Amino acid sequence: EVRWLSRGKILSRLFALRKEVKSFFQQQNNLKFQKLLSDDEWVAKLAYLADIFSLLSDLNISLQGQLKDVFTLRGKMDAFQRKILLWQMRLAEKDLQMFSNFDDYMREKDVNWQVVTIVQQHLQSLTESFGRYYPKKEDPRHGNMWIIDPFAAKIEDCNLSMNEKESLIDLSSNDRLKAKFQSPISKPHFWLSVKSEYPLLSEKAMKILIQFSTTYLCEKTFSSVTAIKTQYSSWLEIKTALRLVVTSLEPKIHKLISNKQEQISC
Image 1 (cartoon, helix red, strand yellow):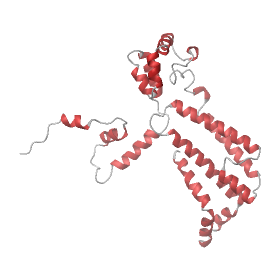
Image 2: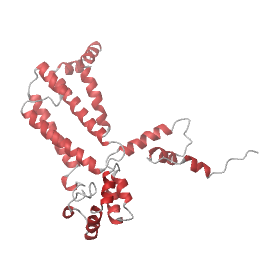
Image 3: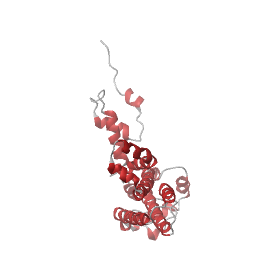
Image 4: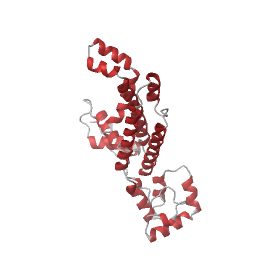
């Protein structure tokens, strides 16, 4: 669940206030939680969870927003998986500095090193989970890197038909389009701009670029529904209102109004 990622802040807050929380449970005579917060190994695990969920939350935030495509997603996911491998190697060398809370607590309390073994197992489990969700054989970058940079792509590596490869050769030899590509223009805007000259390439590129890479738009829509459907605006037609809120296009209000007849008072 996406909501799990937001719990990283809760875990970090709990770890930071663990002494105050323990004092509260003592006042409430709650022996179960007193025992947990008095257990150095349990608190060390809490520190690690606060760290790893914070890192996962940062990753999730970096994937949100407009104009984030499947190429960006896979690149960031690959980078995070490589970081996990690095962390595993550092743990094997007894280096914990990548997990600040965990590192500080382990030094402070001299906790049994067996806890680190549990952390290593969890990181391995994360690696396997990412591998299932993002299998290499389904990597959208394979054969499609020409979409990211049509002027540097190797024709033989492109997942294109013969006609499409010939069109790509023509496009990549066009200095005018190369200058345009190197200007501050987004990938979707570039491929839409060459639709009339290279319709096959433009259509194929856009089919990949418009794919939903994250749940960002869905979450934004749900948030917008909550904001729109208040007791003061429950009468609004939700589809029309959502279209205005979610779209990145700015409606030409003045033009729309000019096409409507003003109400004539009697």
